[in-house]
Length: 158
Image: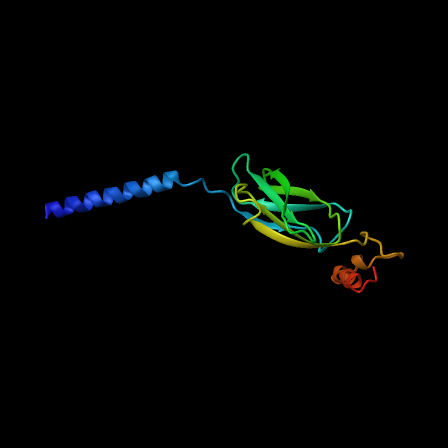
């Protein structure tokens, strides 16, 4: 009986040591990004916007990498890395250069690149913000302004 108990202790000790070695050799976990926040529904070419990403439990020196797939492009482009502030936010200033659909990715694990992390699609229009060729702006109409401008663009009216 004592021999069986000794074998169980030895096997248990080996398993514990193997688990500890695996945990110590694992890469450090990175904090998780929580969504990209865009302040509006429709972006306008030539207007600057702030894209904000929140990082859960960032360490000192944590940075968020931003990538974008521009309209009509086939390759993702790096927009650079932004340090996370004391509230856990990384803020990128972006201005669309052309009308179309932009796809953004942001994550704090810079070794992953544009894979993983938070993603967001933003539609940009060539119509200047706040102007539709008259005294008012369709884009300023609450709730339907952005979709109305997008529909007019699809119909070739703008």
